[in-house]
Length: 548
Image 1 (cartoon, rainbow, N blue to C red):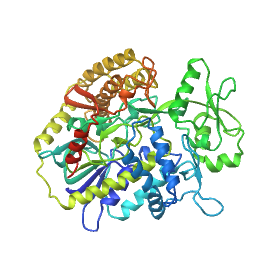
Image 2: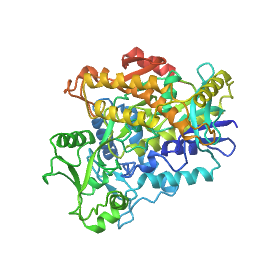
Image 3: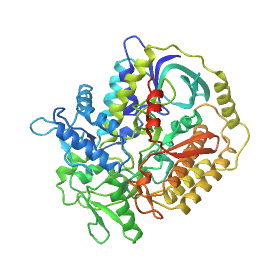
Image 4: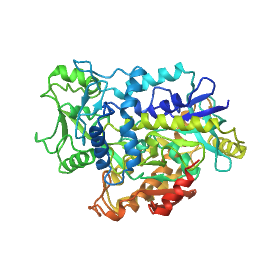
């Protein structure tokens, strides 16, 4: 089946893109790796930032300032300004789609404080904001007649003369490789924090698949050394303890009962402070015991339920042990207002790098980014699809993907791909985590390179082609290792500490690194890493490239 616009990813960015791209006459499809209800967006619990009065220029400027300040000098003011100015319109649109934001006694949308914010600007639906937005968008997309192609794993892009022509996918139901031609494609596949398996709030299959796809297509990744470690994951399960728990008045205390950090500081500072407590031998807890039970049940119902069901903790009476976990990835595919350097290909949401977050994301901005730039990507994809025709698909791409899948069903293996994934996750967290050094990064890269070589000797033990879980797991592992190498090399290049990036051997911020780092895989296993060129000539050249 061919489509005018294909969107890859079923989170808020992908759903918004598909909704904006759909007309009464065109064909739009959303491709998802799993079922449509599973995404990081649906797990985002705390809220979405917005100044609700579009005429309150002072408050909007405050949002812009807080976002840029959090970026530690790497934010792109053009993108940040666009996002903050669009926020009130996006909230109105979400309300029209049926999102039931919490309201106060006057009927106005309630807003709570979040870390790093100068004022209360985070709109919410209890502590399940992402889920509520996702469900409303799915319902809207279905009502518009958008096609959902679920359980399809994207393998690679097809291009014709540096212009998008389609996408090859693995149909998981029968392990068939098929190609979907399209006039325009929007990539919205989420982040890559799942690479830190066992130490992440993300599901294990959030391995940066589409970033690896983009690397193989010749695109650059930007700022991918910046991984946001959420300060509060449940210690035993990694489940996200929403920032709303602190926004509603929760304390962070150590095993001596001492508060040791401002709970509404930015996430990088809190995560580092918690890690330092743990290195001193302390456990760290979130304390909600001083809050009224009614407030916990009303404002934090999901957390209240999860804490009891997962670890037997009654938040109104007990402390909940927490730890920092890999949560969000600031970097991604290099984009300019959703455009990539392949014509007709757009990227948005967590997998794209618009320069919104720089070195550290402001809490509450992820759902806003996804909806604002998902909307923009959909509009641009629709506009592009109207003025172009379907381009030829080079079936050499398809044949190569078929051959690679066939090889995975041939032969046997004595290696355990799950053990390799867990080992990679621990290596990344220990050596490329909150604190890094040149030695730890070299150690991590050597190990990732070794595992990447090992991954090419893996084969499916189960030869059944129907819904073969092993097949997708091996493909995810290979993509995770490809992206892991890029993360490590980018982190090694940044010889400073900035935002979420802490180098023990370079503890200070260095103004010569007030630039993004770009990385490209020019040949399999060989990368080019460089500081972004911000010269005048480079700016003019990029404007020309992105004109179409």
